[in-house]
Length: 318
Image 1: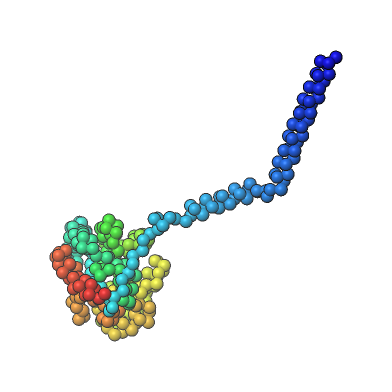
Image 2 (image 1 turned 60 degrees about the vertical axis):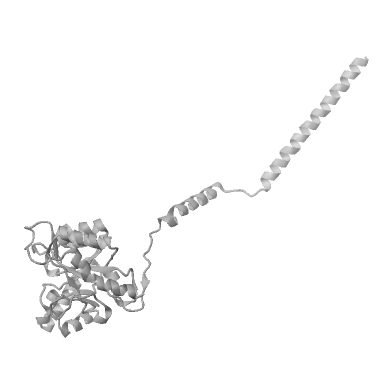
């Protein structure tokens, strides 16, 4: 009898323990549920969207190391001097063009580019040249502008590949009436557009038919200047403001008409019409800018001698 009572007490004690344990589990479960209900709900789609936007922002904002570095221009105390080199044709084929003083062998031309590069010269674009000639700012004390007259096909076949090779700029002056007219050795509009799109070549007017403007009537000059500008503006989607006078020929009517029609910069032919071979500067008059003629006999050393005085001046113009 006594043993039975003891067994009953043990059962009661274990039942009490079990009851307490069950109650504790229930309390914990209720507390967990309450916390879950009271905490702010996170919209998983919104969270995914935010994450996506963050990742997109990171991918579209380039790091500072990938940003292109802009050239810091210098500011001088006086007007700049800019050597402008005047070229015509460059070819590797003796039979491609008539052999005259304007036709430069491609080896000679490349040696000139190498000399400029090795001496640390900045080869400026037409836009750069305009800024240099109208402000006291300059990309470097050592700078030069490469210009090419007539729109020869060698600009595309021989010169353009070298510009890409050395990452240099040039300006080509186009006789627009010769383009796409089966004129031998002249660029096509397709070639011109391709070179412009590269950013290495820009284009100005060399009139419609290449007359000496200084000998033309007022109306004939107007036609040459107005139509060539219209041709370039239409085909290249630009506002042409550079004119290179054929054979360096011009008179006061030429200058007045050029200003009226929107030309702001005019280039001469050294040795013709009183033009002197020297570096250009604003005080020369922006519509009468002198150049240095580069011929088949001009060596890289002679070219460097031509442009050195302007470099010396610019270095003193701090």
